[in-house]
Amino acid sequence: MPAPIFKTNTDRYDPYKNFRFKVKIDGNYVMACNKVSMLKRSTKVVEFRAGGDPSVVRKSPGQTSYDAITLEAGVTHDPTFETWANKVWSYSLSTQADKSDVSLKDFRKNIIIELYNEAGQKAIAYNIYRCWVSEYQALPELNGTGGDTAITLIKLENEGWERDTSVSEPTEESYTQPAAS
Image 1 (cartoon, rainbow, N blue to C red):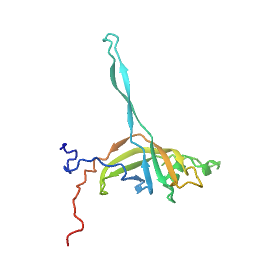
Image 2: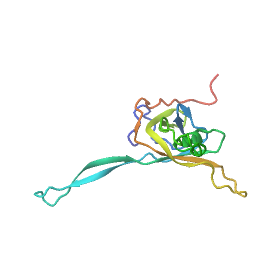
Image 3: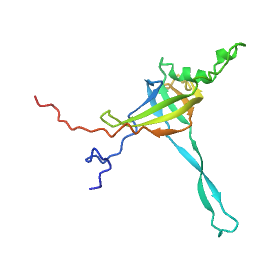
Image 4: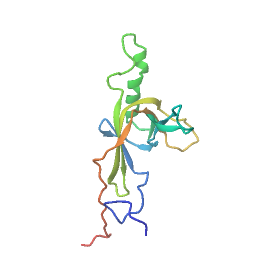
């Protein structure tokens, strides 16, 4: 039998699945959010070789960058994506001479992505910092003969993320059904 990979639930051998998650923006969960792209960061490699060194190049870490994150949700009356995208640029405000078309005060937001186990217990969370909407899709291509769900999306530039270490591994309980009376 393989070694346990969970400290609290030593009988668990399966990693968490990717289909139970929630996204929180401004302290509220995004309704109908059905897809989140991966969290990915890259650190540039800085190569160096002094003139007197052997012909071996030394490598050290350089600048780190964080890939944009895409959030997708089914189209509903929830205006969360549209309201946030309009803070970066608003068409109606851009047509008014005395108005700014960007909300510099609050167009950046911190968001939280939470991953849940199969029982619906929060298992892992990530805090993503200083996000702003660089791309917004209000509606997908519409097709009169199709049957797909209409999806809206935002692409979020961000300045970094980290795991929320206050979220600990949940204790997974066992139960028997039907319950004994």
